[in-house]
Image 1 (cartoon, rainbow, N blue to C red):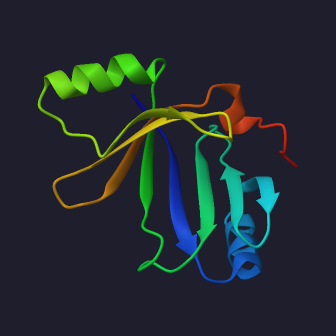
Image 2: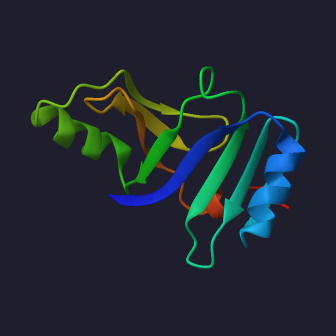
Length: 121
């Protein structure tokens, strides 16, 4: 699994976008006021989703080549999932689970659609 995407909540879309641009991240998706995605020089991505920490938790994304195979492997190791793999309208296949502290984790495959979606900037 490759850790390559983290989503954090934001309460002011434009202020947050400007902040992460100042940090040196390159914005690759612009969907105000709901969603933005940035990329580092190494290709790792960070997303902003409109909401507070109480309404929009941090989500950690691990990309795998085959979501169904990875979910089956993890289930065989007594890992419980809160959702089975499903194809999303943004062209990713995703399954969700939580770590022991309750943090949300997404096992997904986005392929080229992660960094280069049709709606990118």
